[in-house]
Amino acid sequence: MVYVSRKEYFNAAHRLYNLSWSEEKNREVFGPCANVNWHGHNFELIVTVKGKPDPDTGFVIDLKVLGDIIKQEVIEKVDHKNLNLDVDFMQGKMASCEIFVMEIWKILAPKISGVSSTAKLYSLKLYETQKNFVEYFGEE
Image (cartoon, rainbow, N blue to C red; front, side, top):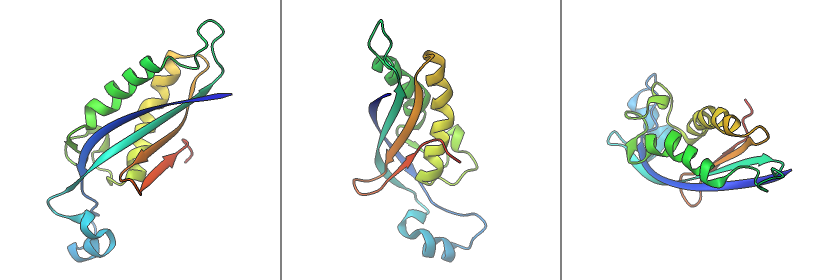
């Protein structure tokens, strides 16, 4: 099994806020991330696909095709957007990185399987900051 990865970047704003909690509790739990005026990050998304190399091309997946899928299906929808307000697949959801990466998986997994009979989405790694990131393997 071979694992190939593609890295993409985007900028986005969000706010961590639970509507069923008071303003005070939100500030207590989420700190500055509950800022009423939002806050932003320079995100880094690493998409890893696993599979056996095609005998004709030697590719697990054509990385140009993978990059196009990521850009069209995710980056163009989230770059320079407010995750809470502007991103259709995040509507009504907590805009934490944990929830965000799970929603990205739901979009990318079928698209990747659709362009290859052997390649499967293996993992997503989403860096919110240089120190903080989440990793998801499609398990719920």
